[in-house]
Length: 195
Image (tube, rainbow, N blue to C red; front, top):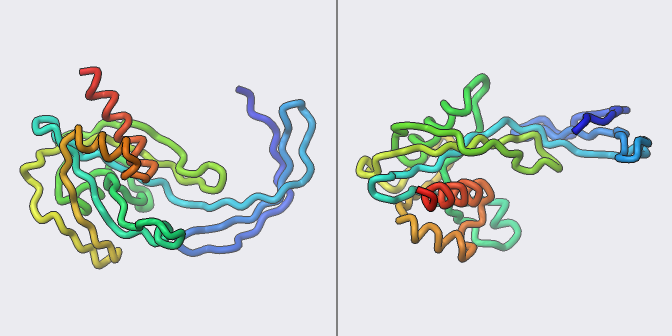
């Protein structure tokens, strides 16, 4: 697929905090070769993130975290979500290093091995954020305290262990609404089913 022409006419920053929001006026080439009129777009400039599926193949179990998500609460939904561990890359940090760090910080587990599963854009219509998803083989017997308070990030995290069949039931029943977790678990289900 050929790259088409994009003309940036002007831009400005609306917010420069944890999120950086840029307002842009641009024109782009249409599929018929003509240019659009000037259109306004907003861009949420975010760091990339890494996420990891903690999987104990010997026990046939995965480990998910549960924590409060204010944006979900703000629309009237249950804000305590089951998710795979994830976090934003530190400046100059490699995605694999971030995945190992977040796994340990959120669950206390260590990855015996890491395998890249997918790289995807979280919300390409508004954000630059890419998510690197890894499979981590872990030894679930090393799981200690299932409650982790991370005061530096105000994160109150509970770790859950699920047999694969139980995880698939939760997934199929819509009890896991987080996109990165859905992508990761669907990938793992396909992988396990073909072995």
